[in-house]
Image 1 (tube, rainbow, N blue to C red):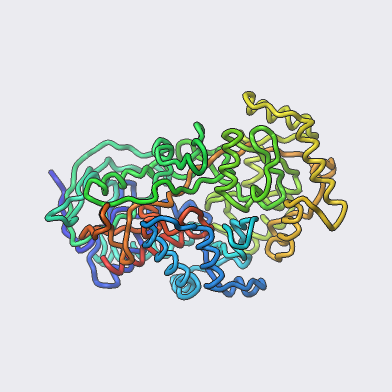
Image 2 (image 1 turned 60 degrees about the vertical axis):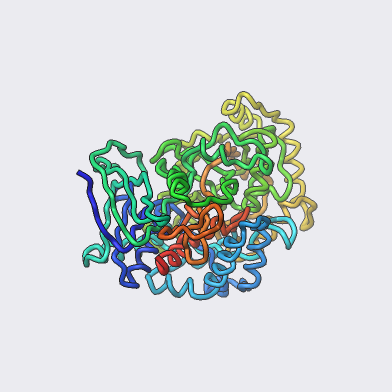
Length: 549
C-alpha cells in the first residue's frame, strides 16, 4: 500500500539547510513534511560532522583580537576568489553579495539568539598567499562554534522536535525520493521508496531494502539533499580537467556514502537546470581515518603554516602552495607530480599546529569548555586525537632522523620513491633561513607573519625552528591524499530560492537550498571558497527557501 500525505511544503533532506528552511516556513504558518532517506539519528546531516566554522564579518570576536574587517573588504575578497566569468553566474553573484551583507549584519545576532556562541580565537583560513587582488581572506574570519558542528545543528534539531510535538512538522525518515511529481509544468509532490528501519549509528552505511512506497503532495517542494562527494565516479565525471588536470585514481571521502548527488539527476528529469557542476572543492590534506565511520573515510588535517610541503616526487612546492593558503592552486600543483603529497614536520610543529577537521576529532570544543580546551590546546603534547592518528594512522611515519623517515615514506609509496639527499638539501636550505630575522623563503616569511596575529601565535603557529635539528624531533612525515568534500555548483536558483529550468525560467513549485544548489544560486562561491561559507551557505539559502516556499 502506498503511503500518502498532503502538506503545504515538503522538504527533502533533514540536514542543516532543510531544518533552517522548515523553521522559516513554520514561522509563516506553513505545514511542513520533512523526509530523509536516513534514520532519525542522522538529523542534521553532514553539518553534524563539521568543525562548526562560520564565515562572519566585523564581529566582536574579531574586534577583540584587533582585526579590522568590513563588508566592503569581505566582498572584495569574495569576488577576487570567486572569479565569476559565466553568463549563468548572475544569480550566484547576487547570492554572494547578499550573503556578505548578511554575514556583516544580522547573521551573528540571529544565531546568537538561537543560542550559538563562538570560540574567541578567530581562525585565518585560505590566506591566499599571492596578490592582494587574488584569492584569499585578507583577515581572519573563521568563527568556530562552541560545540563544533553539533553546536550549529543542536538549536535547529531542538526546534524540529518541538515543531513535531506541536503538530506543525511531520518528519518521515527512511523515505527515499526517486521522483518529483510534475503536473501542468509545476512540481506538486514527491514519490519514492520506504526503506527498512535502521539503528545504524549516524554516518554508517544503512540498508537500502525497500519495505513500501509513498506519494506525497504539496504546494511547494524544497530540495536540501547535499552534493556529490561520496560518488567518486560522479566527481571524476565533472572534474575540471582543463583547470586542475586529470582527477586522481585514488581519493578518500570526507562525507558519508549517502552524499551521492542522485537528487541532481532526479531534479533534472523534472525539468530543473544544473549549472557550474565542474566547480568543486576538494582538500589536499586528507588522511585515512584509522577508526572509520563511513566507507573510505578520510579526515582533513587543518595545518598551521610551518610543515614543509612536498609533491609526490619530493620537490618542495612553491608559493602559494603552502599549508592553509590556497587549496585549489595547491591541488592543481599536486596533480602535476602525482596523486598525493607529503608534509614533513617535527614533534614541536604537530603539537602546536595540527588540528583535525570534524566534531568527533575535537571533543574539547564539541563537548567541553574552557578547561578542556586549554588542557588540549596549550598543554604538553598534541591533542589526543592527533596523537592517535600519529600512532595508528596508515599515512603517518615517525623517525629519529631523515634517512629513516624517508625509508618509511618509501614503504608507503614504493612506486614513487624519494631520494633522502634531495629532501635533505631542500629542508636544510629552509632551516638556514632562520639564522636572521630576514629571509627570502616565502614560507618563513609567512610563518613570521602568522605569529604577528595573536590568535595564531597563541594556538596555531609554532615558534620557528630548524626541522633537521634533532632536539626538535622526532621527525614526522604525513602522506596526504585528495579528500572529496563539496560541490560548488548544482541546481540553478533565483534570489527567492526557486529552481530554474535549463532555459532560466522558474520551475513552479520547486525550491532548493544548501549544497544541492551550490549553497545558493547554483554556486555562490564561484571557483573558490573562503571557508566557513558552507555552513553559512546552508543557513543563508535555507532561510531564503523557507521564507518563500
